[in-house]
Length: 160
Image (cartoon, rainbow, N blue to C red; front, side):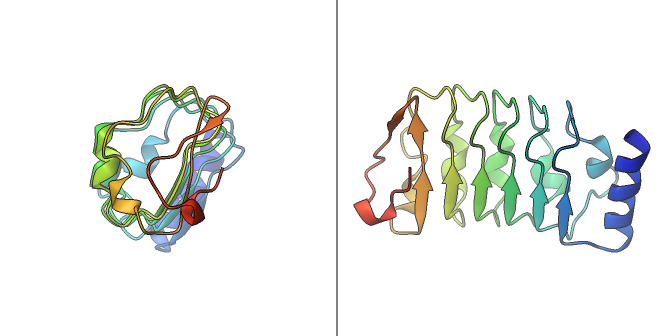
């Protein structure tokens, strides 16, 4: 499995792929191969759903600076690092069905973010201002426990 993963990432790096699918790989750690050297500078979409990830690397934004969409649902992520706020091009972040207990306020720095999915986590509250950049845009799927959260957005923007 490890050699297949390395090969997939190497091909993506060599051929300058914009999309990388690492779903259903039983990954327990974020693959270091993604972060080697200059990382994957051209990568725009990273799909890592249904693995067993528990953390994200602090240097994610530095190594994958052009991410527009990041799909991490159905893992075991407990904490999202503050560095997530440096993914300035990120428009879609799916962290649903994880084990998140808190969301770092740095998510509020993601000015391009239009879709944030946090449903089915262990969240009790959202930090003040973490959703202010999305006030008039698309939708946010947020549930705290079993109750939808109203972060002060217009009704038409809410998706639960």
